[in-house]
Image (cartoon, rainbow, N blue to C red):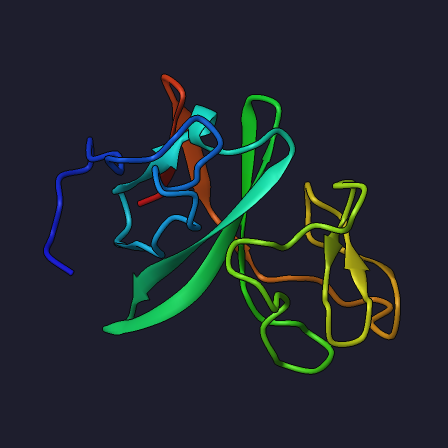
Length: 141
């Protein structure tokens, strides 16, 4: 994907963060300091996947929106080392109160990624530093 300025926000998305045709939004690749999306492009609470450029490699991350805050994590279960989701951009349980690993039903706190239930006691998700400015979520420098 071509580089884009840090003020870039995806075009063609509805308020709920879905493409205008109803399909999930594309997974964008971002670098530190670049914008991920606007808060209002995500459900509240909600989740969305992105690719993060780190050490010359792309790594899938996801963002959880909760009110005016956003929390980022690497998309890897600390117990099985597999992606947490099975559908694009879906990382929360049915009640949208916890992050869910669909492989073995482990649940994680949305605010800090700590394991709340399942076969991962004492473990947690790897956090990704974000910042929110003027309603836009950025990957921290």
